[in-house]
Image 1: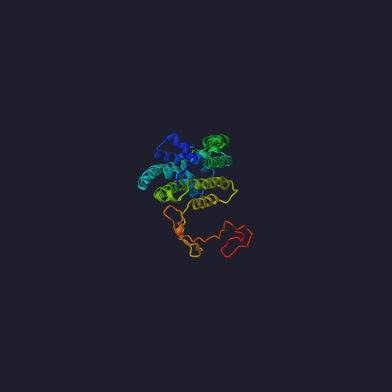
Image 2 (image 1 turned 90 degrees about the vertical axis):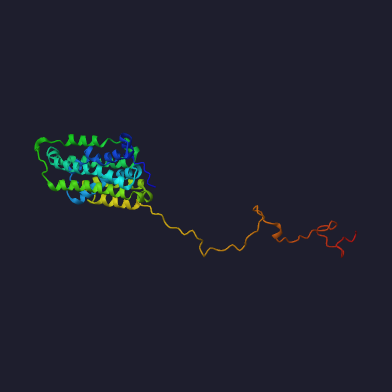
Length: 300
Protein backbone atom coordinates (compact mmCIF):
# COMPACT_ATOMS: atom_id res chain seq x y z
CA UNK A 1 0.00 0.00 0.00
CA UNK A 2 2.92 2.32 0.59
CA UNK A 3 4.05 2.52 -3.04
CA UNK A 4 4.10 6.17 -4.07
CA UNK A 5 4.68 8.23 -7.20
CA UNK A 6 5.47 11.48 -5.41
CA UNK A 7 6.23 14.09 -8.12
CA UNK A 8 8.91 15.97 -6.17
CA UNK A 9 10.64 12.83 -4.90
CA UNK A 10 10.66 11.23 -8.37
CA UNK A 11 12.17 14.32 -9.97
CA UNK A 12 14.91 14.53 -7.36
CA UNK A 13 15.58 10.79 -7.55
CA UNK A 14 16.39 11.13 -11.24
CA UNK A 15 18.94 13.82 -10.37
CA UNK A 16 20.78 12.34 -7.38
CA UNK A 17 19.88 8.66 -7.13
CA UNK A 18 20.40 6.64 -3.97
CA UNK A 19 18.07 6.65 -1.00
CA UNK A 20 20.43 8.42 1.46
CA UNK A 21 21.30 11.24 -0.94
CA UNK A 22 17.67 11.51 -1.99
CA UNK A 23 16.53 11.92 1.62
CA UNK A 24 19.25 14.52 2.23
CA UNK A 25 18.19 16.53 -0.80
CA UNK A 26 14.47 16.31 0.01
CA UNK A 27 14.90 17.45 3.61
CA UNK A 28 17.52 20.11 2.89
CA UNK A 29 15.86 21.49 -0.22
CA UNK A 30 14.03 24.26 1.73
CA UNK A 31 17.44 25.46 2.96
CA UNK A 32 18.98 25.26 -0.51
CA UNK A 33 16.30 26.96 -2.60
CA UNK A 34 15.67 29.73 -0.05
CA UNK A 35 12.18 28.67 1.05
CA UNK A 36 13.12 28.39 4.72
CA UNK A 37 14.86 31.81 4.93
CA UNK A 38 11.87 33.34 3.14
CA UNK A 39 9.54 31.83 5.74
CA UNK A 40 11.76 33.21 8.51
CA UNK A 41 11.63 36.70 7.00
CA UNK A 42 7.85 36.37 6.47
CA UNK A 43 7.35 35.75 10.18
CA UNK A 44 6.23 32.11 9.93
CA UNK A 45 8.60 31.16 12.79
CA UNK A 46 7.82 33.95 15.21
CA UNK A 47 6.26 31.57 17.75
CA UNK A 48 6.97 27.93 18.72
CA UNK A 49 3.66 26.63 17.38
CA UNK A 50 4.40 28.20 14.01
CA UNK A 51 7.85 26.61 14.09
CA UNK A 52 6.31 23.18 14.72
CA UNK A 53 3.93 23.75 11.83
CA UNK A 54 6.73 24.76 9.47
CA UNK A 55 8.89 21.84 10.58
CA UNK A 56 6.17 19.28 9.82
CA UNK A 57 5.17 20.79 6.49
CA UNK A 58 8.53 21.94 5.11
CA UNK A 59 11.15 19.55 6.50
CA UNK A 60 8.75 16.65 7.01
CA UNK A 61 5.75 16.42 4.75
CA UNK A 62 4.75 13.95 2.10
CA UNK A 63 8.06 13.99 0.20
CA UNK A 64 9.98 12.81 3.27
CA UNK A 65 7.35 10.14 3.94
CA UNK A 66 7.48 8.93 0.34
CA UNK A 67 11.28 8.69 0.31
CA UNK A 68 11.49 6.76 3.59
CA UNK A 69 8.60 4.36 2.97
CA UNK A 70 8.74 3.83 -0.78
CA UNK A 71 12.39 4.38 -1.76
CA UNK A 72 14.66 3.63 1.20
CA UNK A 73 15.79 0.07 1.90
CA UNK A 74 17.19 -1.60 5.00
CA UNK A 75 15.98 -2.21 8.52
CA UNK A 76 14.38 0.50 10.67
CA UNK A 77 17.65 0.84 12.58
CA UNK A 78 19.62 1.43 9.38
CA UNK A 79 17.07 3.96 8.15
CA UNK A 80 17.16 5.71 11.52
CA UNK A 81 20.94 6.07 11.23
CA UNK A 82 20.55 7.64 7.78
CA UNK A 83 17.94 10.08 9.08
CA UNK A 84 20.28 11.14 11.89
CA UNK A 85 23.19 11.62 9.48
CA UNK A 86 20.97 13.90 7.40
CA UNK A 87 19.17 15.54 10.33
CA UNK A 88 22.08 16.81 12.42
CA UNK A 89 23.56 19.02 9.64
CA UNK A 90 20.02 20.09 8.80
CA UNK A 91 19.48 21.47 12.30
CA UNK A 92 22.83 23.27 12.25
CA UNK A 93 22.18 24.88 8.86
CA UNK A 94 18.71 25.99 9.96
CA UNK A 95 20.26 27.70 13.00
CA UNK A 96 22.85 29.46 10.82
CA UNK A 97 20.21 30.74 8.41
CA UNK A 98 18.08 32.01 11.27
CA UNK A 99 21.09 33.79 12.72
CA UNK A 100 21.78 35.52 9.38
CA UNK A 101 18.11 36.29 8.67
CA UNK A 102 18.07 39.73 10.40
CA UNK A 103 20.98 40.93 8.26
CA UNK A 104 19.23 39.74 5.10
CA UNK A 105 15.91 41.19 6.23
CA UNK A 106 17.43 44.61 6.78
CA UNK A 107 17.78 45.11 3.02
CA UNK A 108 14.36 43.68 2.08
CA UNK A 109 10.81 44.90 2.24
CA UNK A 110 9.01 42.51 4.60
CA UNK A 111 5.60 42.97 2.98
CA UNK A 112 6.84 42.08 -0.50
CA UNK A 113 8.99 39.16 0.62
CA UNK A 114 6.04 37.77 2.59
CA UNK A 115 3.90 37.75 -0.53
CA UNK A 116 6.60 36.01 -2.55
CA UNK A 117 7.10 33.47 0.25
CA UNK A 118 3.37 32.73 0.14
CA UNK A 119 3.56 32.38 -3.64
CA UNK A 120 6.43 29.93 -3.50
CA UNK A 121 4.62 27.77 -0.93
CA UNK A 122 1.56 27.68 -3.21
CA UNK A 123 3.80 26.56 -6.07
CA UNK A 124 5.28 23.79 -3.94
CA UNK A 125 1.79 22.67 -2.92
CA UNK A 126 0.72 22.49 -6.57
CA UNK A 127 3.86 20.54 -7.50
CA UNK A 128 3.17 18.14 -4.62
CA UNK A 129 -0.41 17.53 -5.72
CA UNK A 130 0.26 16.99 -9.41
CA UNK A 131 3.34 16.42 -11.53
CA UNK A 132 1.49 17.73 -14.60
CA UNK A 133 0.73 21.06 -12.95
CA UNK A 134 4.28 21.27 -11.64
CA UNK A 135 5.69 21.18 -15.16
CA UNK A 136 4.06 24.53 -15.93
CA UNK A 137 5.09 26.29 -12.71
CA UNK A 138 8.44 28.02 -12.20
CA UNK A 139 11.04 26.60 -9.87
CA UNK A 140 10.91 27.88 -6.26
CA UNK A 141 14.40 29.30 -6.69
CA UNK A 142 13.14 31.51 -9.52
CA UNK A 143 10.22 32.77 -7.43
CA UNK A 144 12.47 33.49 -4.44
CA UNK A 145 14.97 35.26 -6.71
CA UNK A 146 12.26 37.48 -8.16
CA UNK A 147 11.05 38.22 -4.64
CA UNK A 148 14.51 39.27 -3.52
CA UNK A 149 14.83 41.60 -6.49
CA UNK A 150 11.38 43.08 -6.01
CA UNK A 151 11.79 43.59 -2.25
CA UNK A 152 15.37 44.86 -2.27
CA UNK A 153 15.64 48.05 -0.23
CA UNK A 154 19.21 49.01 0.81
CA UNK A 155 18.19 52.06 2.84
CA UNK A 156 18.02 50.22 6.15
CA UNK A 157 20.95 47.88 5.58
CA UNK A 158 22.75 46.68 8.70
CA UNK A 159 25.06 43.82 9.56
CA UNK A 160 23.37 42.01 12.42
CA UNK A 161 24.04 38.39 13.34
CA UNK A 162 21.88 36.50 15.80
CA UNK A 163 19.98 39.58 16.80
CA UNK A 164 16.99 37.51 17.94
CA UNK A 165 17.94 34.37 19.92
CA UNK A 166 14.26 33.32 20.11
CA UNK A 167 14.11 33.24 16.31
CA UNK A 168 17.16 30.99 16.18
CA UNK A 169 15.60 28.73 18.81
CA UNK A 170 12.39 28.49 16.78
CA UNK A 171 14.38 27.66 13.66
CA UNK A 172 16.18 24.88 15.53
CA UNK A 173 12.80 23.70 16.81
CA UNK A 174 11.37 23.59 13.29
CA UNK A 175 14.31 21.59 11.97
CA UNK A 176 14.25 19.31 15.02
CA UNK A 177 10.53 18.64 14.52
CA UNK A 178 11.17 17.74 10.90
CA UNK A 179 13.97 15.35 11.87
CA UNK A 180 11.85 13.84 14.64
CA UNK A 181 9.02 13.33 12.15
CA UNK A 182 11.39 11.53 9.77
CA UNK A 183 12.68 9.35 12.63
CA UNK A 184 9.16 8.34 13.60
CA UNK A 185 8.41 7.37 9.98
CA UNK A 186 11.61 5.30 9.81
CA UNK A 187 10.91 3.50 13.09
CA UNK A 188 7.29 2.81 12.20
CA UNK A 189 8.08 1.91 8.62
CA UNK A 190 7.11 -1.80 8.80
CA UNK A 191 3.61 -0.89 9.99
CA UNK A 192 3.15 2.25 7.90
CA UNK A 193 4.09 0.44 4.69
CA UNK A 194 1.24 -1.96 5.33
CA UNK A 195 -1.45 0.38 6.61
CA UNK A 196 -0.67 3.83 5.16
CA UNK A 197 -1.71 5.16 1.78
CA UNK A 198 1.12 7.54 0.85
CA UNK A 199 -0.64 9.10 -2.12
CA UNK A 200 -3.66 9.91 0.04
CA UNK A 201 -1.35 11.57 2.56
CA UNK A 202 0.36 13.43 -0.27
CA UNK A 203 -2.88 15.08 -1.38
CA UNK A 204 -3.72 15.98 2.21
CA UNK A 205 -0.25 17.43 2.69
CA UNK A 206 -0.70 19.49 -0.47
CA UNK A 207 -3.90 20.93 0.97
CA UNK A 208 -2.09 21.78 4.23
CA UNK A 209 0.69 23.49 2.26
CA UNK A 210 -1.91 25.44 0.34
CA UNK A 211 -3.36 26.71 3.62
CA UNK A 212 0.03 27.85 4.94
CA UNK A 213 0.23 30.96 2.70
CA UNK A 214 -3.33 31.86 3.67
CA UNK A 215 -2.40 31.75 7.34
CA UNK A 216 0.73 33.83 6.66
CA UNK A 217 -1.37 36.49 4.93
CA UNK A 218 -4.02 36.47 7.67
CA UNK A 219 -6.71 34.85 5.48
CA UNK A 220 -6.94 31.71 7.64
CA UNK A 221 -6.34 31.03 11.30
CA UNK A 222 -2.72 30.40 12.20
CA UNK A 223 -2.87 26.65 12.86
CA UNK A 224 -5.15 25.74 9.92
CA UNK A 225 -2.30 24.01 8.01
CA UNK A 226 -1.37 21.94 11.05
CA UNK A 227 -4.99 20.88 11.54
CA UNK A 228 -5.25 19.91 7.86
CA UNK A 229 -2.06 17.86 8.10
CA UNK A 230 -3.36 15.96 11.13
CA UNK A 231 -6.62 15.20 9.33
CA UNK A 232 -4.66 14.03 6.27
CA UNK A 233 -2.56 11.70 8.43
CA UNK A 234 -5.68 10.21 10.03
CA UNK A 235 -7.41 9.56 6.71
CA UNK A 236 -4.22 8.13 5.17
CA UNK A 237 -4.23 5.25 7.67
CA UNK A 238 -6.24 2.37 6.23
CA UNK A 239 -6.68 -0.33 8.89
CA UNK A 240 -8.08 -3.68 7.69
CA UNK A 241 -11.57 -4.43 8.96
CA UNK A 242 -12.20 -7.84 10.44
CA UNK A 243 -14.93 -9.55 8.49
CA UNK A 244 -16.74 -12.65 9.75
CA UNK A 245 -16.77 -15.10 6.89
CA UNK A 246 -19.08 -17.62 8.65
CA UNK A 247 -22.69 -17.73 7.39
CA UNK A 248 -25.32 -16.03 9.45
CA UNK A 249 -27.82 -18.04 11.47
CA UNK A 250 -30.65 -16.11 9.85
CA UNK A 251 -29.74 -17.34 6.38
CA UNK A 252 -32.69 -19.33 4.99
CA UNK A 253 -31.93 -22.97 4.40
CA UNK A 254 -32.39 -24.63 1.04
CA UNK A 255 -35.28 -27.10 1.35
CA UNK A 256 -34.46 -28.80 -1.90
CA UNK A 257 -31.90 -31.03 -0.19
CA UNK A 258 -28.77 -32.51 -1.71
CA UNK A 259 -28.89 -34.03 -5.12
CA UNK A 260 -26.83 -37.15 -5.54
CA UNK A 261 -24.64 -37.31 -8.55
CA UNK A 262 -22.79 -40.01 -10.30
CA UNK A 263 -19.37 -38.47 -9.81
CA UNK A 264 -19.44 -36.35 -12.93
CA UNK A 265 -21.78 -33.64 -11.65
CA UNK A 266 -24.89 -35.21 -13.25
CA UNK A 267 -27.71 -36.52 -11.05
CA UNK A 268 -28.25 -40.28 -10.92
CA UNK A 269 -31.43 -41.41 -12.56
CA UNK A 270 -31.91 -44.19 -9.99
CA UNK A 271 -32.39 -41.65 -7.22
CA UNK A 272 -34.92 -39.54 -9.09
CA UNK A 273 -38.60 -40.35 -8.68
CA UNK A 274 -40.22 -40.47 -12.08
CA UNK A 275 -44.00 -40.55 -12.34
CA UNK A 276 -45.44 -42.70 -15.15
CA UNK A 277 -47.13 -40.84 -17.94
CA UNK A 278 -50.31 -42.31 -19.36
CA UNK A 279 -49.97 -42.68 -23.09
CA UNK A 280 -52.94 -43.31 -25.37
CA UNK A 281 -53.24 -46.70 -27.01
CA UNK A 282 -52.44 -47.00 -30.67
CA UNK A 283 -56.06 -47.40 -31.69
CA UNK A 284 -57.51 -44.69 -29.57
CA UNK A 285 -58.29 -41.36 -31.13
CA UNK A 286 -57.75 -38.23 -29.11
CA UNK A 287 -60.93 -37.06 -27.54
CA UNK A 288 -62.76 -40.40 -28.11
CA UNK A 289 -63.80 -42.01 -24.82
CA UNK A 290 -65.73 -44.87 -26.46
CA UNK A 291 -63.40 -47.72 -25.55
CA UNK A 292 -64.21 -51.15 -24.25
CA UNK A 293 -63.07 -52.70 -21.04
CA UNK A 294 -59.83 -53.78 -22.65
CA UNK A 295 -59.05 -50.26 -23.76
CA UNK A 296 -59.84 -50.96 -27.46
CA UNK A 297 -62.18 -49.11 -29.75
CA UNK A 298 -65.49 -50.97 -30.32
CA UNK A 299 -64.91 -51.33 -34.03
CA UNK A 300 -61.69 -53.26 -33.56
